[in-house]
Length: 346
Ligand SMILES: NC(=O)C1=CN([C@@H]2O[C@H](COP(=O)(O)OP(=O)(O)OC[C@H]3O[C@@H](n4cnc5c(N)ncnc54)[C@H](OP(=O)(O)O)[C@@H]3O)[C@@H](O)[C@H]2O)C=CC1
Ligand SMILES: CC(=O)N[C@@H](CCC(=O)OP(=O)(O)O)C(=O)O
Image 1 (cartoon, rainbow, N blue to C red):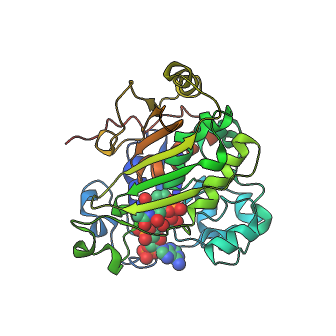
Image 2: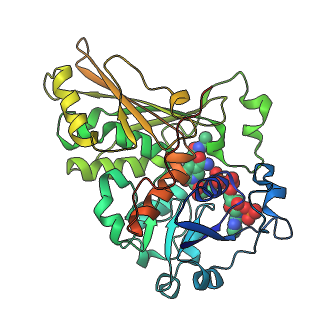
Image 3: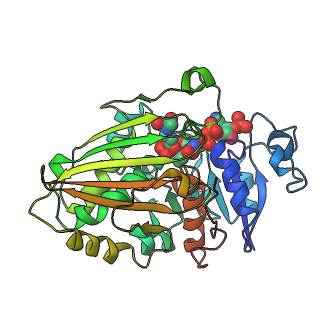
């Protein structure tokens, strides 16, 4: 049995990790980390866990936890994991960090976009960007995983095959993305109040969102040259889900069959990536509660652009599901263990 500890178990991503790990046959949770609820039972914070989880919330203590756990998930705000990680901790346990602390290889770039001083730069190089479909072999050997961001997961998987194959002009990429409000976490924020979100759609972080460098870096590695792109996120009135619509100019004319063959060659064997039939656009409702990413594309011959689309659940494939997928790979398990979740509908 893999002993798992969660720092930040009382947030949305942490709670989703608990939900998934409770159904995992090779893992047990030994630590429900929290600062705010240490005197409470976990089910008193999340009543869906009544008669399922009896444990109490525990103070966050990385050193103590490293003694007890084979793997630690940090589902905490930016800057926390990087302040707790050490050689001593990593010599005892593996870490899967759901925050962005180790996603960007250039520490100066991280500091510029996040406005945080990186306290453990020495581990950035070692950390593996845990997008399993792309970095599977490196994930298997890793002791520190930078679990990808939610928008980046959906954006990168949507664009990656065409970037890697040189089919699109990377100077023309525009990503328009939408997220449900669970993406913003459980903390109280005025922007996420019911009256602010309901019956409303708004762009935010325009030309400045912190996921921009993460997407640029990963697509840059794919196509072998630096990438600069536009990424515009929007907040939409739903609980879960991310929808990406991305645009790029084709380098040369291509047919539907040519592009479909490329997507299939990358994803046909991937359990969690579904390339939809021709003409079917991905929808968040068909992936909710699951670890699937649904993808499709359409060529617009009038503009010589290809439109790449993706949908997934931000809390599953965008956070906790991907983290469990990484854990499975790191411990030599079947990658899908604990993740055979049929999407919920309606
Ligand atoms: N929500 C999403 O869709 C996704 C989130 N992520 C990332 O996962 C991480 C968690 O996000 P999310 O669950 O949404 O956020 P929440 O705000 O819902 O939860 C944050 C958690 O961190 C704990 N926490 C806050 N500050 C500290 C601290 N200083 N020390 C220890 N624990 C702390 C909080 O609990 P307590 O107060 O009890 O300690 C809580 O459990 C973030 O880095 C986020 O960017 C990644 C992908 C998707
Ligand atoms: C709707 C919303 O506010 N979304 C968050 C992204 C959520 C997230 O998960 O951030 P990471 O993936 O980088 O950890 C945002 O825009 O900052």
